Image 1 (cartoon, rainbow, N blue to C red):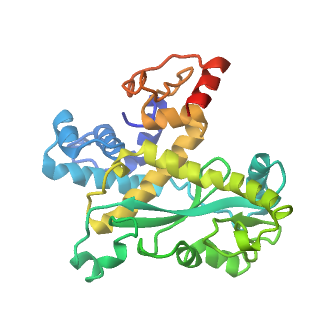
Image 2 (image 1 turned 90 degrees about the horizontal axis):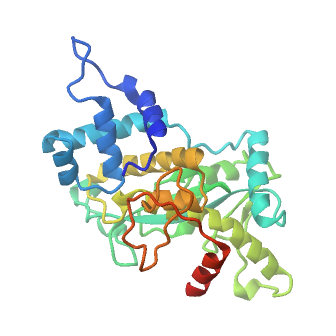
Image 3 (image 1 turned 30 degrees about the horizontal axis):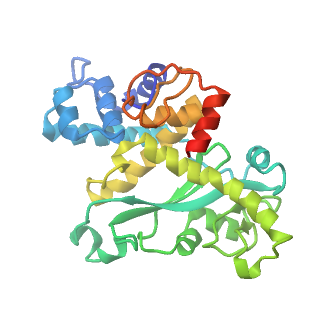
Amino acid sequence: MFRLDHPSFEELLEKIDHHFERDSRGARSIPVKIQLAVALRFVAGGSYLDIAFAFNFNHTTFMTSVWKILESSNVELDNINFPVDDYAKLQDLEAGSSRISKGKLPGTVAAGDGVVFSMQRPTKFSLDGDVASFYTRKGFYGYAMQAFVDSRARFLNISMKMASSTHDATAYVLSHLSKAIHNGRLHPDFHIVLDEASQNKKQKISPLRVKELDIWRDSFNNYHLSLLRQSVEKAFGILLQRFGVFWRSIRVAFERIPLLIWVCCRLHNYCIDKFGAGRQAVAVARGDARPGDDATALLTDETAHSRGRRVDLEVSEHTSLKLMKHL
């Protein structure tokens, strides 16, 4: 329901508690614990009408509490940092990537890609009339993000500088990480991997296109590069499954969208640190199970209605083989 277990909820509550002022009696009009629960339920996908009713909130104060919680969480969860100047941490990132690629592409420290979050049509006033730039080629208005993640699907760096109609290669060039690499801050022993929208350049590796490909030599490298890039796709998948606010078009003020995305990415990292990024964590993220369950419900016809319940299953090798055949 809140995408956190009780100990993690209490830990986060302790981090942000000092951001909320008390009145002269040392009390608060609305307990911070309630405000945190409301905000987490909102980003998890709950309707503000249902949440306000369930927690006995006035509709006019609901979003005020949500934004206060998100602002304080954005400050306290300082967990999105690319260690561009820390050689030891870069070595740790490389070690994680090497486990995925079996050491075939040494030096990889991050995988990058872009994602677009669907949003309601912004007003001309909020964009100085340039609404069309936020209309994507896929037929919806969106807010774009460039992200770079490690082998554990944790966000290391995110950038939201460009409109959603911008090409991924351009969005990358304008990101902070691109500028850091261009200025020589990343040690020459390391590089990042991107998709084929970007060109192969110094410390930036992307798949070779078909016309450039030596089928006997380069397809093997493309295969392992694809393995490494799965981390960023996995991160996007877990992020979107965990935070239901992205399941439909975002309906908040345009200038508030970056804060919402930042905090969801920080909460994503917080959850990865607590629960990991394996199959169990993905099931917890999408609501099929809770932390501590032995296994997860598979979204087949028989288990599609088990969302939100505790699941205690043991998935045998035979069951896994049947699932693979079904897929």
